Image (cartoon, rainbow, N blue to C red; front, side):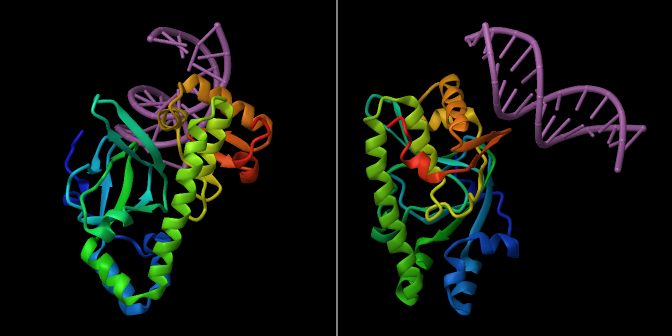
Length: 236
DNA sequence: TCATTAAATTGTT
DNA sequence: AACAATTTAATGA
């Protein structure tokens, strides 16, 4: 398990198809896109890899091409607090990139993942040149604000079934994570880590949600059938 | 491409 | 936490 940012190693170019999975790429003009694509660093991360850690100066704006990451911090007592998972299509770190500050969280790969990084300088260049890009970032910030408010609500909830449902709804957010689509690739163990429950309890919750017709449980993943029901489950 | 084997994931106790 | 059952991934002919 390596701990250095994989963006400094194992680089690999993006295919055309993968470029199109990056949600903000299509918003750019031809020359803007070319500049962004040239600067984009892509790497494969294995489970445990740290993409960034708290305190380090922000170098990249990050995106998930494929796989699953988690955002967390370590408190003074040495416990790890997990905030959220980041599935495919998710881009994050605008806040620190905007202010050119240090990262305020750790980003770690939960599974084998394909990640991309846009250098902060290029990020700022895009902000200076593309109105569409500005809108994207603004929309991104706004949507995430909604997620964090929802996250507080989840925390105060003691019904595990509802917790799992809401957490799933967050991961299925089509605005923040357009790469997810109908099926979210996540194991029940990974979901248990993110939600903070045992795998058994998550399994039980998923079975309940499936019986309600909100999701379908598949091997190595979950299919959404009713996103609205996940956001406002009957048990709430 | 197919059959065999190993690894991963799930469902249950 | 441990177990068996099931699914997928890897291997090699």
